Amino acid sequence: QVEAMTQLSDDLLQSFTPGRVFRHFDKGKRVLSCDFTPDGSFFMGSGEDETVCIYDVEKGDLAKRLHCKKYGVELCRFVHNREKTCVVSSRTEWDHKLRYWDLYENKFVRYFAGHDQQVSSLAVHPSKDLFFSAGLDYKIFVWDLRREKAVAKIASKGFPVVAVDHQGLVFAVAAGQQRIHLFDSSNFFAGEFCSFDLKPMVADPAAVVQTLEFSRCGRVLLVGMTAGYLLVLDALKGEKQAVIKVAGMVADGEIARPCLSPDGNYVLCGTPSGSVCMWRAQGGAFVGELIGHSAGRPPLVAFSPTRVMAATSATNVAFWVPVVS
Image 1 (cartoon, rainbow, N blue to C red):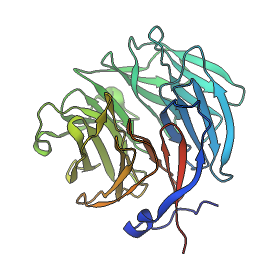
Image 2: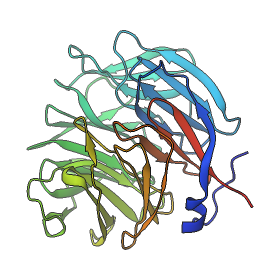
Image 3: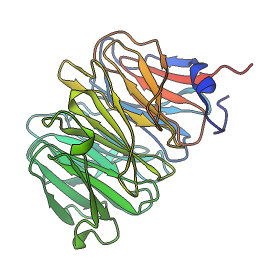
Image 4: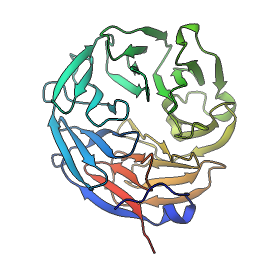
């Protein structure tokens, strides 16, 4: 039984231990992307073995394992508050379409063509039929799930990243520079309504934004950068809350993907040692680490939006829960 969300603390996170470990991906094949449904009931991972595994969190068991042999799955995101549909990007060198996947019927509902290279960032609006993508072709698109063609395109001068807040009011874009641009998701044609300059917070002028994530509460924006920088910002004002420097954040060319706790008070990030480190979001003090995965590429980590639980993924998936005294 996984506990419902309660007040998080250093002691609670330090007590995390693997409650369940799943080995449903082919031996030696890594998990490439993961996501929780907004209600925290289901967890999904896509693997190098061209499968997608969906887990029932409450039962602590595998709910479904699907194959996508033709295209593979690089990134996967649940659509709205349902475990029955998702948006995925492909892993092939010859096809870069996004796909709207009916997981219940196991069929693709719609294809979205626009990217010329691999999609590197994907975010789904929490309530509207919108989603956002960014790719290695330096293109950023806004899509409507009901239409095959993009409804908007945003220019980028470098590696682009996109994220949407969990209330669906704002989406954030990094477009190859040390700056975050914020758009009104209901009026994105008007252009950005504000931007945050990251240069004063980062000592390395060559550091590039690689990941963006809003906290579930909407107060905090987490920015992951090359050169091992994690920036914790006030999501409304862009003010710095912490700058965390992660040693060895890059392994085999892969950037670690950090995450926030739902309350925005903690930062978690995988490292090449196989551990997941934890810090306070306010000030950046080190809290502890989750040790269990083998050394190599940094494990993925995601915090449940509704439960006191984190999921980490490498060549297997682990659900971490606190020790109840």
